[in-house]
Image 1: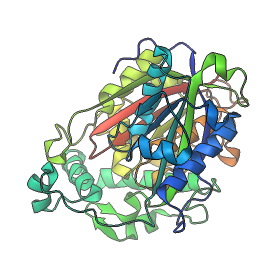
Image 2: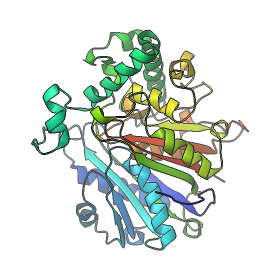
Image 3: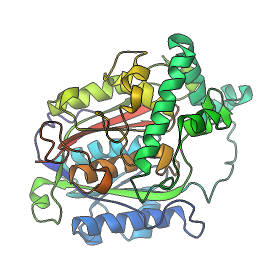
Length: 391
């Protein structure tokens, strides 16, 4: 999708929030997490439910979500391409607002990912049931480990393993600074990472994201509407999206994702370079997802991610602030995670991150001013990237 020259500051995120309680919440449905997150985001922005005329969600129907929340939207979008969907929704909301379809767009996600875990009835007509499941490709850990093992073959097993360990340990350190993170009170050493049980080789337990119950919401509106709201606007400067496969067996290159297109495109539209960024938020469904995304987005060359993240560069105190909430690896991950990337980026840019607050590279006396958010969905299938900034 083309959203034109988005470097202008005419569309803003004005509210973000999670659901009330996250982690293991057996007494709440997915819809309750949607509604709580939406309610909290509206309160964060100083808006009411009656102000919402655009609704976007993924993994479920906007019909169901809108009815449950009592919203009657004039614009609705349930684009579902995995965990990247909510990042992509920001660009869709931006386009809809500019086209006059709505003025206040609410993006919600809610999922009882842990408490409602169950096997879905198999649909034999689905391509993966016909062509992949018979060979053991039945879920994300297996699919992603296939891609990672190819990367290890191409760029070296020991080197890749150390890069994955660096990411897992650094991300846990950020979670230790986030009171809302599931792993807030649990530290991780390199030895503990390497000694954790195998899930699907080459993934240890700590290479894999959490499974939690939680929800998140984001509110997008016009610059004019943002002037009258509670919080300073966070501007959407650029966006990109796309996908190149569904089945992991059809992935063109196991060592590269569509972020190679959506990442540079979003930054080009925003008129920025990698060096301008204060904060990078990358979907970390697995440690490998982070490595391949860093390379695909152009932060480093193919095969160089392990060197790029070496010596805890991405941990608190390092010079490359990455996944500062604790990420899907240590903060929360109910099944899809893109919405939570946006929540943390906005809080960082508004100076609301507390002990984990990132500073501006250009002026360390000020808080972070510029962030990029990249979501990944499916089996490394889709990506959505947005560039966010404050005044």
